[in-house]
Image 1 (tube, rainbow, N blue to C red):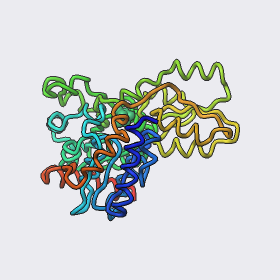
Image 2 (cartoon, rainbow, N blue to C red):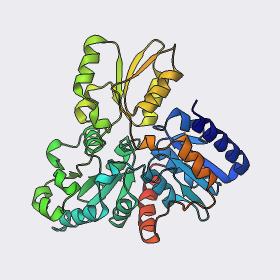
Image 3 (cartoon, protein in one colour):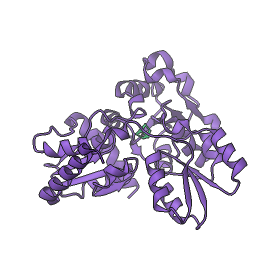
Image 4 (cartoon, rainbow, N blue to C red):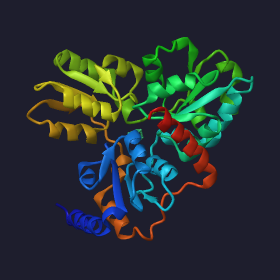
Length: 350
Ligand code: SF4
């Protein structure tokens, strides 16, 4: 073990012990084993969001990417401070939807008096969640996307789903929303002025309007990988995350959130071989857990660089300075409408 790593572990252990209940460390399933070993609570985005309001800790460290720490900062109680070991750990998918462009797009879509309900995947900035809250919309995770889309479709004349086009299409497919009532907006809205690329006429007969973002990690899973496994190991099972393309999802034996994938691995019969299409840290952790009982392999090699920015060293360094570290915060004008959007989801999925 490198000296810097053993020093970091010593520091983390000492400070956790000294702070006791004043500190809680939360970790997303995509974190490395080394970081996960030092977390008090592990989970997917929905599970971790639910925990925030019930925590008594004064300092809450979020080992994940920035939008997760922002969501925690929106839901935190007064006096609680939210921290992330590296503020540069951001989610490229969340960065594909910028709040100003989302609001401008909603204005265009509503020009003809249609009420369009925005529904944002939790992988989005606090500012986007605030826009969504202001326009009577809500938030979803991969675990509850079906419930939330059903809800949103009943609230107005149509839904704008963002930022993940694959989760959007996979969820619409699961609910049998007809293809001809769906439209994916041009990719130019990710970085350009929506007034140049979106018109009310484009979407007037559409019930489901989809922002064109995607997760660069899950988009890497290909049909070729699935075809190879089917040809060489016909008894192997393949399960994937719904951030994968609809073709990959449809060719798999099941799809769902990280919690679904974990449960699928747990329930699979002894001796089963399961290929899992999601971030590799989680897959390798499951492979180690079930070694000797079942074979678990990554569908393809795929690591999220941003999740990997959280390390033992920067966790230790944050802990050493925690009393003076500026917490992740969200201004009140963003926090209140964003909280409304998140709380709608938590109430609907209670
Ligand atoms: S795995 Fe994809 S969605 Fe998750 S944080 Fe990384 S880029 Fe974002």
